[in-house]
Length: 334
Image 1 (tube, rainbow, N blue to C red):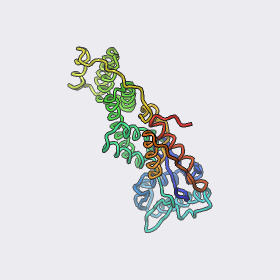
Image 2: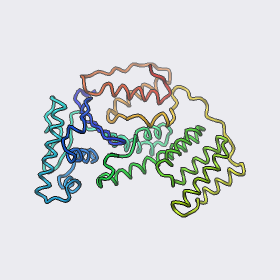
Image 3: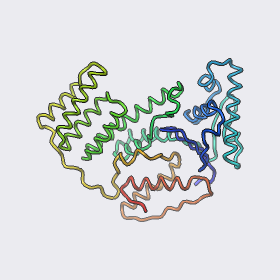
Image 4: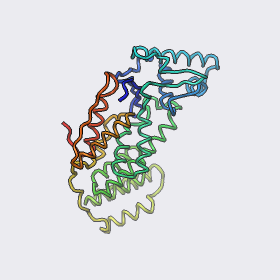
């Protein structure tokens, strides 16, 4: 493990910033614009931003000279907050301004849960396994920067991430149905409808999950709810596919199926156990090594993993994430 501290951002569900294991509170940045500049940087690929992009996003109403002065003031506030959080690194090394470009940097890299979610979503779309969908869904702990919902520079990315999350939930629900885990499938589809009550695919999934559980009346009631909300909000009727599914349920063509067998060690946990955690970002190599050892354990091959390093580099947080990976595979760590 790298002994130098990294910068770690939580951007989904809330804003939180750690330098190593030390949290830097929002109040440390002295001004709202300084905090906004930091958030804007965290959203950008490789956490770098040209001065003109920063000014256009945060000070569009000011003349260029005045806007630049406000940006420099915000840079100063950010660096002062970093300076108060660590004596090991100069703040100018963490927030670099060179050639009219701002860049966040750290010896152990800069990590965000947004980047982690995007990476896991891509992995899930490629692998299409129950575990990969579970892991990606677990990483999405809420909408992007909810405290900045009215800031124009967050809107497009927030909506894009929400759309990806809904797509992952629908795929996860279908994977649960394929696995015979109908209650977990129903929960996944309910979560979609909690975000978008007009999502007809989620209504269909919930109808099917209810029918496969033997809850025919609930399945029919779900169709009624779908019909009512589409009529009220869009002045339209359910799609042909939804009506055909209703007909199949009424005619008994979708019969209750056997529930999945009890999960053994190594089996994935349901989504309900996954979405409340705050996922770790970064440490992909260490987590991959831990996951490999856990897979060996499922094959009866016990091994030992030792975490070591200086204080403040994230050992406790890494141990918590390995604990989570073990739970995800059906183990009960002590």
